Image 1 (cartoon, rainbow, N blue to C red):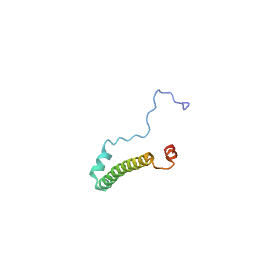
Image 2: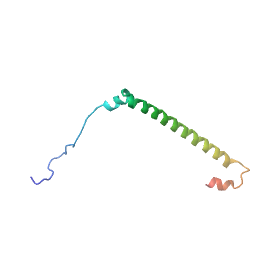
Image 3: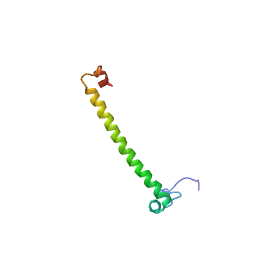
Image 4: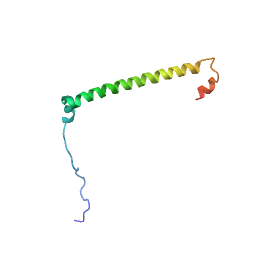
Length: 79
C-alpha cells in the first residue's frame, strides 16, 4: 500500500511476440526483397574491395620501405 516493490521479480512491460513474421516478410514482400538484396550485394562487394585495396596499399608501402635506394628509408620505416 506504500507504493514500494515487494515481490521477487518484476514482470516485463509491453511485450509483443511476432515470431518470424518480419524475416518472412523480407523474402516475400517485393518492396522489401529487391532493395534488401541489392544492398546486401553492395555490402559484400564493398567489404571485399576494401580488403583487397587495403592489402594492395599495404604491400606497395612495404615494398617501397624495403627499397635499398630510397633516401630516408629509416624515417619511413619509423613512421
